[in-house]
Length: 438
Picture 1 (cartoon, one colour):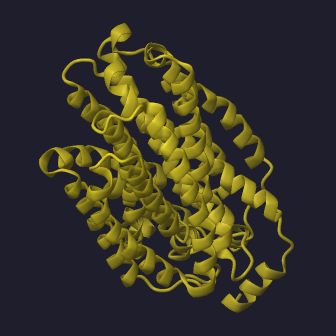
Picture 2 (spheres, one colour):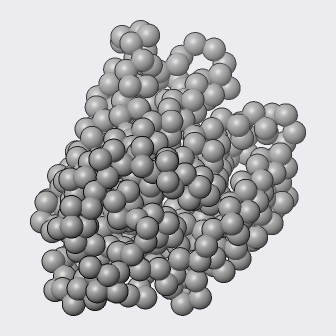
Picture 3 (cartoon, rainbow, N blue to C red):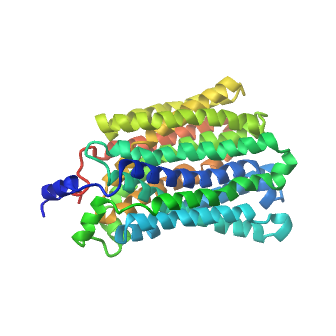
């Protein structure tokens, strides 16, 4: 069958999944996954250090907590290879269910894990194991959600459909942050440290049941179903990916770095810095973050629409340049401790995160053929996280001690420059036929 005939047959087939079901299933999974992930990020900034690493200074506790935060990002590329293998050979639907289940179980178990005072060194060891499991789950989640959206999308609307999983982080962030804010307002500091911080982790179990209910009702994507009908599947997807498509993986990963850097510097590091150095209360800074993330949610559909209209590269280049310049604003806006300046910085950084993040839901899947698309898109997405996010709070803590906030702003600008160069090296994929990419 020619590529043109294949494309026509896919376009003429009645969609197995309605647009509403696609949007809900791709959105809800990433919302839950990022809720789970950001619950830990917030806890790492506020309480993980004293509970699991009580020895040493407050700075040492914070650094230890941020190291456990980074462990999950190391696990994510492994998760992308593991879940990508089954996603490319068995199907998108069953793999998405498994990744969501793993992430939710690990997050819930963190909520009941005893601290160092109860079980000694086993507490940080088990915490690291569960964080690794969280990373494995998230490593397989995003790629499947993005493929669910883009492989079901009508012609000319892949970025718009690919936006739905990109909206998940905003909602997950708001849910996690809003819950921590409510706990900060309703509990004393002693209650929060003793047991209150565990409640958001336990709530994950309820959210996972909801996500599983939605995803179990899905049918397989038409693009993947066509590939299976032709028996067009890789024997070992990760081997074929590395042998034939390693350059798109590297460039896609580098293009993702700025998204991660913007998000985790403006949330995890800024939260820690705002509470410990600028003197904000937990609830005060969390309130500013909840307001700022609305700008991320706003930028996501706007950027997706623009990338469908004008192309992925123009939108990513423009937002990348603005992100590079934003690094220079960090020191003047945060160093004074003004609420207006801090809120403005958070709004700008998270708006730019949404602008750089939204087109990636379509771009990364468009770089790879169907037979390795799950593995390839997941690998690029998660490898970018190692550079842009895994060590970002840790290095930012070190950089601010070495040279102040201007050094941390330089980190953001360097991440933006790396992503900008990668995007310039990529081909424009707006008009690519997913079924014909080879």
